[in-house]
Image (cartoon, rainbow, N blue to C red):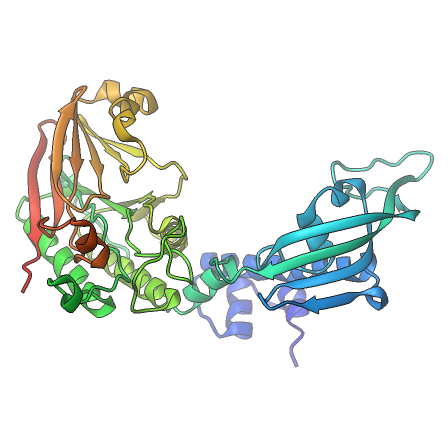
Length: 442
């Protein structure tokens, strides 16, 4: 049997060789190195948790109760530093529970009457590096009786689950495209497909309108992207493509099919299937776009899918890290700004700012503001097209191609035209065209 840890650290060959030998994955050296680094981090974390368990726990005095809500209550005597005793999360880790997979429901500690002095010479303490002195320095650990109740994070999507979903995607070796030097001075192609709500379930028998599920949405996405690309190519040279991601691309954000804030949604699928297929659609679109011109991806969080859309964008960043034709903006800011020639475009989901949005571009992007003449904010959220001008900025709500669901019917939000829009920008002359891809309800 292969000793995985020994092979990872001491085995022959580079990261690419080791990944192929141990996992059967033939990737580029750069991507293989990233995978190996992640595996090492996982093994080291697991070893640290095990060491905490062995060093600081008293297994013989351990009592575990399994509760009906799938939580566990553990009573155990362990040694803790003062800083650790003040942190339920650190106590949980000392008792062998990974904070990525578990959450603390309650924690009660009772201080014992005996201490252990641990010598620390030339070692890392919790706060700083200990320096050698004439006497060994000590760190006092007091023994505590701990009653800890923890629960698995089944209601949220954790990092291991995200990682598992990405493993289902086949590794790809990407073709590099060379762009015509004449493209410099060409147009900006902006493709902000808002509020796709992939994973939504709509039944025409309930809504009186169209059906919508994973298969229908997948077909619609491909048709819409192809339609807008074909219309764009009629304009001539495209210098750059901006492709915002997020904006409620996914319909829900948790295994319980709720939004980021916890609102229950209707869906016909599990989150893993929605996530993997959604990533596949984004990759498919990016591959078509980067044949035309370099693609810049921006993460714009929505209110339905803040976590999953960010995880998808992180995955795309890693996936395209070896190519110059795709760049990814992973910054956590909810609003982003891009300057193209004399055009300044701001992006926001437009759910929370209200009228404050009218004064944010000038404050958040003052240098870009000073270089621009044409300024627009592009937003989603309302699934309908609305345009107004204020403070020298055009505020544009962009329509959606998603179907009407039961919530919209019950609340009377009906009648919007289902359409996606793309924008063609000239560096000097501003917005030249708005391209519509309309969905005809049968």
